[in-house]
Length: 254
Image: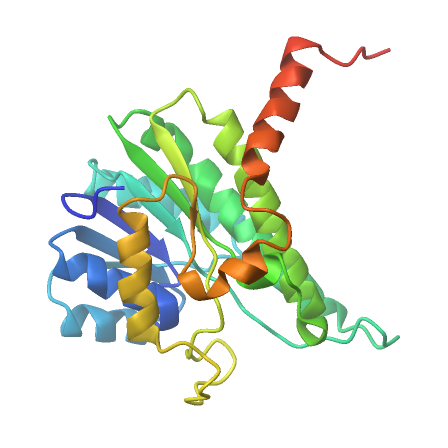
């Protein structure tokens, strides 16, 4: 992916990795548009980074996603990059009978249906661009789940799986589908603590941009390579072969 001369829309762009990516791309001279729920935070980012555009978005609102996509495209017809970054990370206990159903539904709405809906809202526009990118932010937990955030980990595994399918289905278009799989980065996703086991945000952003410049499918910092290898880094080749075989030899229906 080229790192300059893009028009980039980022969900969850008011804090953490989203803001870090937004500000880094802005410094490189790209036109950046960030979305978030809270206007005060959007205004704060815009004030600190003159030129960044902002738009309010509740990622759990399907109708609002469609409206926001139309507005962003109207304002920025050269839009060619969409980064699905918004996410939440509550704790849960899969061994407990005490399920917080509202929390679980909200997590699925934000982490899984949010990126799916955002992608659907922008993909036809992206197909019309000479070269465009859909970038989904998953997690190392897509490959190595943490049991105390079992459902969060599962949503990230789902995003990884969805990205593989999305990449295959867009293989003959101008849209490249990338996946960023962060390690534990020291942000306020749970609690910004300075824990030495976490990766500093600025280091993560710098390494991620370096990888984005060369990687064509997955973008992950070197530190998570052993964890990513848990399921094999070349799984997409098998996914593509499998799906192509179904196209070449359709399953009889009825």
